[in-house]
Length: 420
Image (cartoon, rainbow, N blue to C red):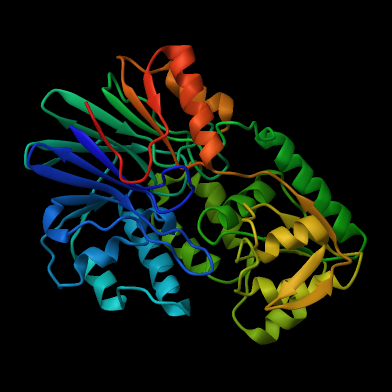
């Protein structure tokens, strides 16, 4: 079994790993790295791929898969859960629609990809020639998976993006992966401990009450898939007494998740959380609600486009309002500028933000100690590839794994091939 690292080498983004099992090639994820212009993973010829696995819908894992279907052929099966395909369609379609840059595929190629989809249940094995693929629950996003590949007595475990503590929305990851010969593990927070989730939840609730009780509006810019719904569930779990409003693409994600209650930790609480929130349907209401005492949850999480721009403009001018940053804020994004400098950036137009801006950690990724808890469960003596983190995080994590467990651990370079 060989793994060719096509992306996510010492970087967060464009995850892509080509697993060669003798004459069978399995592509684990094929994502994009979204910057000012997207960066794609290393090229692989469609005729050299026997099947693709999409571990979850986020674009850094799913966003480049349509490029394999430019010929219109549906010969390559795509493996994933049904929520993953429905959410991937939502996110990739939005990327195509908003692209002011070149994408080497179009909407029709996304449709061809979806025609090739094979909807798997968790723990349901799927044979690709003589290689077996099994998906397990990852706890990261609705329908998200880890992947186990088995061939010729060798077993590979790929974490994708993983969350072993769960959340209000999702169950913890399923870590029954057995004895393994190779592990591809995310390193996003391998050098950091995030704030305990309960501390973040209580801090957000307290901030929301503070803002609304002084007559202000709290805006919570959130990723449309998972984060927006998680925040709504947190407010419901703490029996928040004021109005909650949801807007933007999060509403379409709400509808998709509602169709898949089996993938949710508490389907009834989710139903109440999004059902009792006000869903904004047009600009007339959007303009009014920004002046009402309430919590507004809307994409984009980093304030790059979407109705988030309108809401930021609406609340930034008064110190009675608040903005709760609950999503990752990438370098150079308007969200990072707002957080660091209290300056709102609207397509180059700068505006001083008088609203109270606070950050709360709600990451869907494991922290350092939780990643080591996964490694503590490993049976066997696997090779370990530390990926999906910045360079220092991947490199230090590999050294620590080698020192603590004696495993052959590396932070691979892009294009590197590793064999077991």
